[in-house]
Image 1: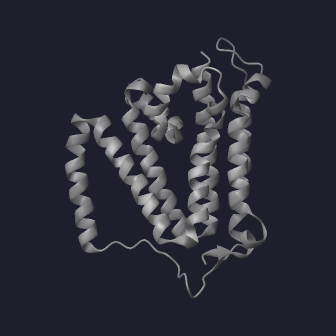
Image 2 (image 1 turned 180 degrees about the vertical axis):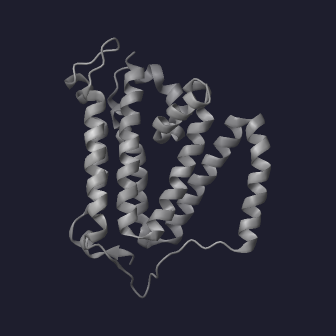
Image 3 (image 1 turned 90 degrees about the vertical axis):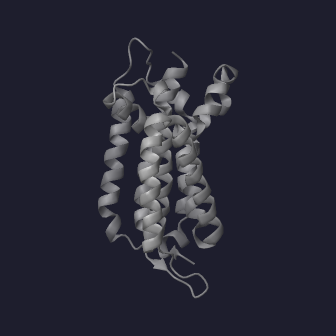
Length: 239
């Protein structure tokens, strides 16, 4: 199986899943602990994520020297993402067709692209059982930081919005930042969140295929982006 010496001794992926769930569930408590409100946000709202990012970066810098190596078995050879000339031509034609459609129907096209990315993600898990745990962890790091939504007192008020926004919520933070660049309100650029979520999934599959070290680094990035995005979404919900 495509595992590693360290991940076979330490349940790294399980720790990522548990950590994502814990962070997501504690978002309201963290916000209350900072003693923030809409008119006076605490500096802790950016200092704590910044400190977490610095710690993650430091860990990634020493990650290449950690004893994490892929152990390929005879029944599950290493998976690689290979593109034939035909595949590249199809992708190029698809992009050429999608660009003008995206300009005219941004939400519909981006939703189709996002659905296609999820379908590809599921197909990847079916074809590569040795990577299912890593893939499940990737999805958990994208979604579980929003776990507080389940216990939100006013869930009924935002439920319909959540149904529409769910696929784009993992990319809430980068989409909100890019929407400012485009001069749009975030609620008017939901298509951007769909596209970025699709990109997160595809990049995640690529990192999983490249090996456990790159996968761990990418999981840290995804989890922290979702956590900060979840915090921002919570602040909007209580506004």
